[in-house]
Length: 320
Image (cartoon, rainbow, N blue to C red; front, side):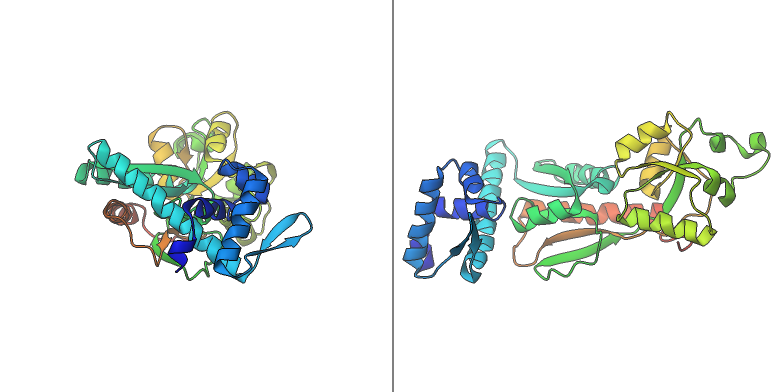
């Protein structure tokens, strides 16, 4: 039987190989020398009676059997790590733990709201949050590093191993710093802000290829204009907020995050029609891995927070 032939050390090495580019890198990740790692893999292949890897120059490439085993090993090691977290939490007087991978756009409003609800309803649950790009986070989910991932997808997801729930799709708002001339009251400027003001302004544009950038490009096509000046392309929320506080530039931002910074006095939301968001925020988890009670409570908290934010920000806006 497979369970009698595979050692934990071999599973750890396979899980590292699923993430590392070379055998030497995987060996370092689990504190093995490369010869010792090669010996473990050769012993496993001999015990199973099936080739797991083949040489391609100085690199190892998994066979079909090896590829199947890599994915399973990563999931098993992830399960063991989660069990360790659960035991540690229980040892500290808690009742469980959950690990969340969060896209940057979800970390300002959605995730804090969900965590507040969770801490109110289940204060004895420990939650670890790691921020990253959606691609990195989904890879971590498959490898067992996260129970749940929340964020905005760059493209439709075709991976059938993942369960994906659409949470909400906040509209977009055009924003500027509080010192920008367009932030002054309409009475002081003599008229309300207009789309022509937006087209003539200096812009911070989202990075090329991102959903937000596609939305901004669509906006300017609709206006039959191009931005007058776009000296910076950046998807860093922290950088852009700081930049707009010191220079008269415009930017487009999700309505929930724009309102958050407006309440802090860090940004001004221009009184222009809201724009339809480029893609919804989603919640993802593995179909064939049951959630721990703590992770299930976190999922419920994210859904509850979503309901409140959906009512607050509304859906859609004018198409761009």
